[in-house]
Length: 112
Length: 114
Image 1 (cartoon, rainbow over the protein chains, first blue to last red):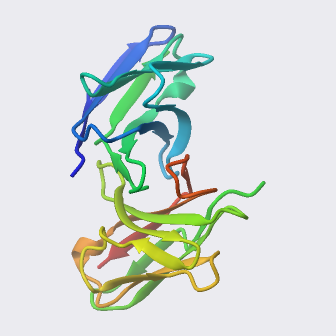
Image 2: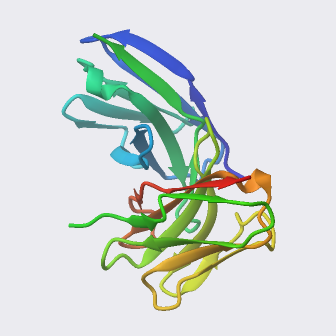
């Protein structure tokens, strides 16, 4: 079955710097890759997603890139702010299975 | 509009007891999912409903776990003879279709088995 690995497990950056979180997946049939932000005591909140027919997607300070050949995808956050501090999860999904396989999460700390 | 609602937000019970966790999906969403999240881990899939039927229950860990969605809206996750290892946050998500579209999560029920 699908396996998703996520790195790093923790990441500290200075306010205004960029943050990059990377994920790899094992199932070449995976075709949908969402990213979630989870704050303490809350459920995961979708922040951006990408489908396998697209190489890059951007939404303001957040962007996601996908390399299907290498089976990895990355989240890029520019101009980080203290409110970006949270745990971020990547996930992979295959059409026809519907369930998400999540990575183990990255705890991002943005230092003011 | 309202998001996914889960009740209770916290549940503490003794080992061996029976518990029910409720999920109210976003209105009109036909697909509903249950996940379990242990401390420091990502959510793990339990079961997926399309309408009233369980389309995929491959993530349920054993026969003590059961879920229903009798009218295609509200779902209840039921755990019999609870064990300490069942302690986790149980998350519910819904999506407008079951075709791999974005899933929207509730804030979960934190279940603690003493």
